[in-house]
Length: 129
Image (cartoon, one colour):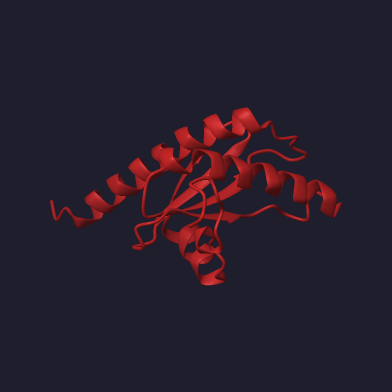
């Protein structure tokens, strides 16, 4: 039985088509350290996708540090995030030195904000008025 704070492989967005779908149809929310793209996945679980570009951080160890902090923030705040959503996390600024506590706060706030925008967008597209 995995611990409630574990990060399982099933909690990752791996497929390129899922990333593309989130970028095309998802909703975005941005703060100081983080940009979140949210897209419903129909699975009932929240999954994490990371997009940390090589263009901004030339050195792999810097990109890996950003990914580690984002993954840890997701793991620690998983219970507070909306269910059934793919969350793609992107650094909000270049050369970001992420702070775990700030990323955790922003992640929860932005995930809910982006999810609400997504629900609004879906309601508007279904409304024939």
